[in-house]
Image: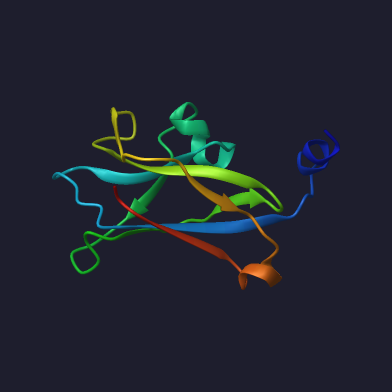
Length: 120
């Protein structure tokens, strides 16, 4: 596939993607992560815990990413929210279908891309 070969090249432009979770109630000590079908999202947790989201007393039960996932421009991807006690601990996955995103050009998405999911 020519497209896949192009996206894999050094220097291919990247689109920063920020994530947020609403209504993600956790037990004490749990954190919310985003995992997905792309290396930047740790390939469904196979390559790591995922992208950690953060919260505080004013924001909870909403969570947001402090760092962006750098997705290759033009890449469709799937993602899901999970809760973990530790980075290497078991995951509690949200229910339902995978969420989808597309790392569109900044001019089409207004700069950086921000995706929010309500925990289910």
